[in-house]
Image (tube, rainbow over all chains, first blue to last red; front, side):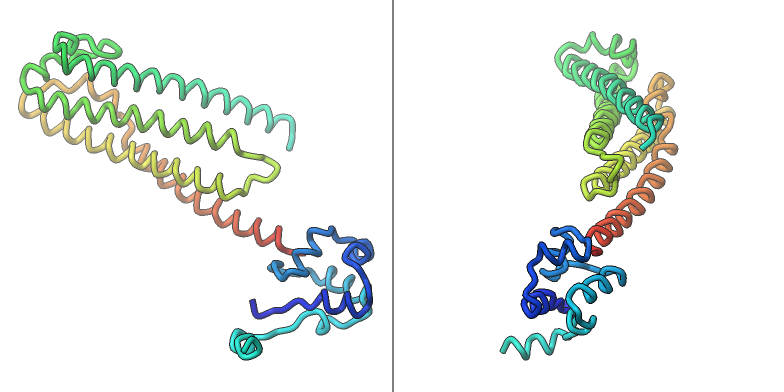
Length: 76
Length: 178
C-alpha cells in the first residue's frame, strides 16, 4: 500500500500510549490498531483532525506517500 | 430491526423448512419408486402421487428411465435449493447482512434455480418430441410446468447476488474506515 501510516512514530515522539490516544480521539482500540498497522482502507477527516490535535502534529507527520519503487529501493 | 420484520423473517424460515421437508419427501418417494421400478416393473403403474407410466415403460424402457431421470434430477435439485435457502436463513444476521457467506449462498441459489429451469425446459422439450412417437406425456407436465419461470428467477437472483457482493465489498471497506 503506497500510503504509510507513521502513527507509532508520532506516538513514540509524544510518549503517548495507544490507550491514551484512543481516549483522546474517542476511537476504539481496535480501530486505532487497524490504522496503526496499516490495514485501514480510509480515514475520515474528523478522525485525522482529532489525531493531529491529540499528537500536536500535521497530517503529513502521520501520513506518508511512497510508491512501490521507493519501497523496494529503501528495502535494499 | 422492527418487530414486524423479525416476525416476517421467522415466518419465512418456518415456511422454508416446511417446503424443504415436503420436497425431501417427494424426492425420497421418487428415488424409492425408481429403485423399485428397476427390480419390480409392476410398480411402474402406481408411482409417486399415483403417476402411471406403464404405457411408456411397455413401449420403451429407455424412454421411461430417461424421462424419470429428468423428474428425479428436478426433484433432488429443488430439495437442494431449499436446503441452501435454509442454511442462508440460519446464518443471516439482519443487523449485519452483508456477509461473504450470505453473498455466496445467494449465488448458489441462483445456480441451483438456473439448473432446475434448464433441466425442466430440456425435459419439457424432450417430452414434446417423444409425443410424436405415441408416448403419453400429459401426466408428466406437472413436473416441468414452470421451467421458464425458474430461468427468469435465476437471472433475477443472480443480479441480486451481484448487488449483494458489491454490498459486502462496501461493508468491508466501511469496517476498515476509521
